[in-house]
Image (cartoon, rainbow, N blue to C red):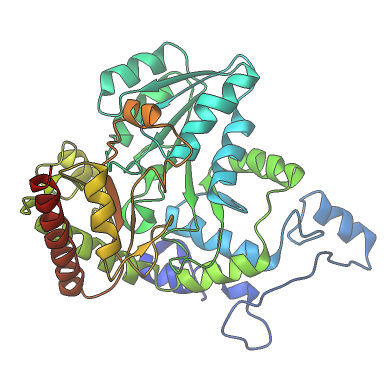
Length: 406
């Protein structure tokens, strides 16, 4: 695509962004370049590429043409100066944190972040004498107080996984900048279609590309976007430590991203209708979805999100016993530890997002054992709601029978 790609709409960027220079010999799709090495007859040119003085590739652990196009596409969608990819979302998150932090530094974050992220905060960073302050996600004053008390990195996730809390990125990023902290936001649930943290004051945005960006549950990947200087530091950590995104994975992610806007819009619409339905069912204890007016952070979500996303969660009366009866009855939902795919997926945090955590740790993060994380797919929403209805009816009857037999 010729011209200034910075000023085109998101839907067009998902299809065309970053691809033009890498389409070869009339191909309409970016090729998968599997070569590990890239040869040069001119040693001066080779040296310039190796030193980053000119564009090019020398070794697959560092950069790759197919991977570069994926990075460029996400960079454009997030409105960033630069982007670098990783082999997984957790590699992107851990690589970012270990790039920015050193012994004696302090990171401030929220209690109910994704389970893998939480383990970095509670298990791994303390080994390196890095101080970690985890705050109540809904207590902005506590987050601001802890940030002003000393903060190298302010790490946020919005909406959070799996309780769908929303943090005021603009408000908290302002406090982070006041104290010179680097503000990092995990934007996996929202996607760049629904939210752009860099425009709200964040310094870096991270994604598990495995989820909504790829959208087909067939490729692992992660990515970090932000200023050129910060991304170059993170890239250097990644190229040395080796968590490189493979070219075939990059190709699959690119292919999936062609329909990102269409998918996310449909998933957001489906999730909104499903959340509204679940609110009315007597077996449902509570529904967590930022698009509901009853959601604790609905006003913040309205301010910073275009739509409210394809993720929701809900708790069932009767505890985990009810969850065990309900979930296997779903016909149109994979019971799997994934999200953001074209097919609906569902599961409890104890087997998905927070499987590494103990029940006590989940309780401390505000995650009830009877919670179900539900990633709405692109199916017809009437079918999904009917599927939920029949599974809830079955679970309701089973709960009634079990109660009468006691």
